Every structure is written in structure tokens, then in C-alpha cells.
Length: 292
Image 1 (cartoon, rainbow, N blue to C red):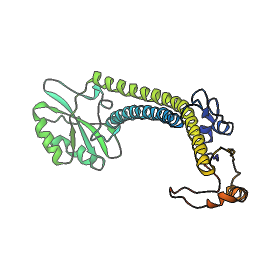
Image 2 (tube, rainbow, N blue to C red):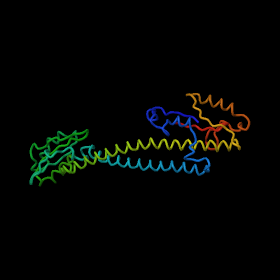
Image 3 (cartoon, helix red, strand yellow):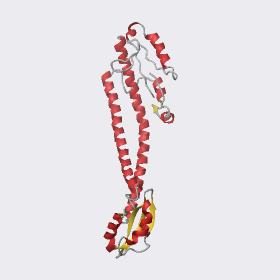
Image 4 (cartoon, rainbow, N blue to C red):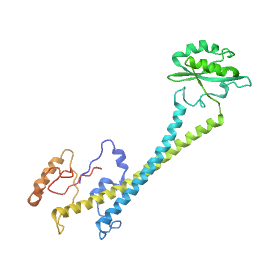
């Protein structure tokens, strides 16, 4: 068995523990957990229980990641409405009550004007329909593509104004200011942000705990496989020694050569350093590599 640490993850790996110790220390000091997996229990049953425990963690992981992804999708949808183009985004957080005139006869429209077309808008908006209030257009906001203007006019010419504006590539936004609805959307977005933060923190803590359980189960499975394959290769009664080796960087090939020369005699010589029928590298000794 071998141990390697993924580059760039030292800080994360340092926080991951198995039974209160590092994964590498757990591996090098591994002892069979007799309390959880009694030696008298059949290996098939032990394997089934190990698989069930890991499958339960995997199912929980899917549920937790699904819930987190769903919350992030909802937040993303709300954020896009609040942060998209002025031609499509929700205007509730941009337009203020003081920007609007709403009386029995007068109303204020919000118009998204392409930025390259702003001069034409200012020169022509008063002529797009009758009864447009002169000098009533005011710049409210702008982004990379559009500028948002207001214009005040008589209610009876709104339809005519909309048609003329559309013909001139000015987009009249359908908008009605509802302060309570705006505050409700802001509160919903804040609640989702808080919920996502709490879920992410909870999941991080859960993953740390689950990592120890899964890694411990994995090493037990490796121990079972080591035992079974050694019996199949060397026969009964059991007469073999299991150990953990961690080669220095770039010295694995040298270590493999020493092990092959030491253990590649007799019956073990039938095992060559080539791929077996499962696509796994074969050695004249039972070997597994574990990356941490």
C-alpha cells in the first residue's frame, strides 16, 4: 500500500481525520476493528455491512448536495432577475417612488434605451405621441448595454407611445412599483443566501465526519482483499506478512525492483510485472496502492 498527498490540498487534508488521527497515521497504524467487524463473522457478511454503511453515506451525500444545489438554483434565479440587463431585469430595486408620477390623467413609463441610441431618445421622445410631458425624461440607471429612462405622459396615449417606441428600438418596460413585493423579494434572497451558507457549513462538517467513516471502511475492505488474494495465491495455512510502505518521491520504481528480486522466486515467478486480465498491474507479491 502506498500513500500520496494531492498537491494543493494540504490545508484541506490536514483537517481530515479518521478516528481522531490523520488518514496516513490511521493507515500505517491500522488494526482491525473487532468491535464493529468481529473476526468470527463470515467475510461475505462483513463486506455487505461495509458496503451498506458506505452506500448510506453516499445516499445522504446525494440528498445534501441536491438540497444545496436546489437552494443555489433558486438564489441564482432571483439574482439574475435583480442583476440582468436593464431590458429584462426586475426594476423594483432600481426605480423609486419619487421617480414616478401617477395621477388620474398622468403616468410614468420606464424605457430601456440602447446606449448608442440615447441621443436619439432625448431628441425624439417628446414626439413619439401626443401629450408627452416636455422635458419629463430622466436617466435612472444604466449598464453596459442599456440606459433606463422615465418619461411622463397622459394615460390615453400610452398605447400609441408604446408602438412608436418599439418602432424606434426603445423598449418600454411593463412596471408597477410595489414596495412590499420588492422588500419581500429582498428578504427571500437574503434568506436563501443565509440558508445556503448554513447548508454549506453543515455539509462541510458532515463531509469531515463521513470522510473518516468511509476511509475506515475502505481500509477494512483493502485488508479483506489483501487476505483473500494472499490465500488464493499462497494457499493454506496462511503464511504471509502484510505491511505498509511509503516510498520516497520518484523511488517507487526502485522499490518495486527490490521487492521483485526479493519475492519473485519460486511459485511467485509466475506473476509478472504486466497487466492482468482486469487491467491491473501484476507483481510477484500482493500489492495495492492507496492515494490519500
